[in-house]
Image (cartoon, rainbow over all chains, first blue to last red; front, side):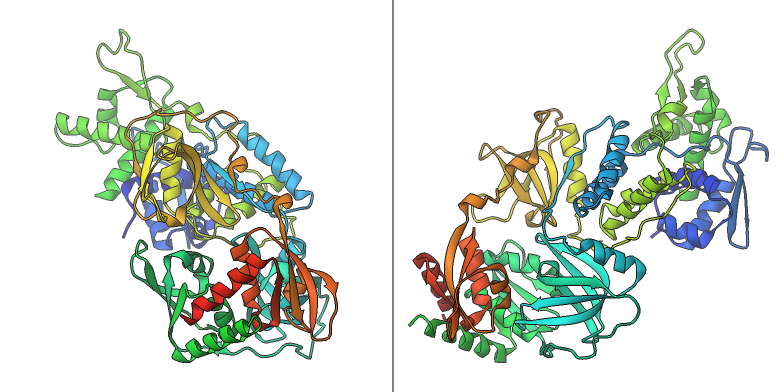
Length: 308
Length: 311
């Protein structure tokens, strides 16, 4: 679907001043910056090319050249300066800065605060969005961010909850995400040759690896993955299970207001599934696979035996 | 069709920006390209265009009715209300902003953060990239609810929505702030039914929001601090549990606990907790490798939960 006239107008008004400061930019790059297709950018440019001031002789039109996919603006007419920021643009930027600030414990946090003050000077409206972030749990954040930026590896010692063991791994950090107050690291684990997710608060040590320093022996055990169809019946009171595990939920059936919903999961570590379901004490019921039902019940019996 | 309208809107903006004096409506309809048809049709078109530009946040000033215009108003867009003015930013600051604006990869805030940064990049500040971080963060995607709630906040309009909770379904709230707290989005506001300030998780909204047409229905105290209304994590209310942990197991629990006594088969640890349910789940995670000694309530709560699985 093509954009509305209003969206296109807004974009055109932003495009001209941007081009003025980025002379000779390629349309491919422009499309990326403005988040639209290259075809759309080309159509926008053709259109802008025909706009100008009353009179509309070549002297009064916006003067623009595009050759071989590169664009130059020589006369922007009255569109020299970018438009002022909208409330939502300003809010989004300030919230982004809030977030970045909360995730840093170094001197950059101070720089960000100064920058925010500077931007707020010109703000005539209140900022309706507040960011509150736990400051803990970020010990290794900076090392990991550095590794992500440089695409380099780090050596971590990790406590695995599922396998209940301590392992040393060489990983290539890919991204960090935050869920339910906990920072997670997504990384390619060179040691187990697979994509892995690590909780930052379970990383015991973390150091950048210089050069190639392979950890040859993998100290951990292999995990067993549940690859077949996994379906769970989740009661309303266990709703947070779905919220906290959005990344592995492939489908939910039943409306949100019903007492129970049916949840289908992506392939997942068997041990993780057993332990998680067990903790909800019957609020989550395994529908499939059947083999899992017995495993969970056996585990429950083993626990109860301790107290009998 | 969309092309012609876009073109006309751009031409109108250009003309109103270029003029120092007010342009009469008749001048605009005659000279700005794109106004066609009968006088009536042109005027209607112009009225719509003005509304459209205003909806983009462009201020169109209407000139005072003076002798020259007789009863015809004049229009212009003052440069100073149109143009972006920010205090001088350094290249380093712009770089920080670019990194921050990328935090919202593909969420609802991303397009506005991106268009905001594009405008700043159109100011001719040379960017210097001397940061060694460019981390990718992923969060719960803010939903379009945020946009609606912030609009209601700025007009001080009450909202109502269905909320997924055990008791009251339909909520009437005076929205105060949208809160991003530990990775989740919340609304904080005055709950009109409960007559108290409450938090609502946006992921539990089960209906679209209805925003009252009325404005300025309430006020927000000037120094409103959302953080005081968050459930407190108070060290003083932490409780302690005594737990036996089987040798070489439950490493995570050992890591956060305090070793009280080493034994042959089990070691005894003390762990602190705030919420019993959360601890029960954590302990069950370790299966038959842990055994609760005290408190008693914790023990029976754990047993009850595990028995629930066997029902």
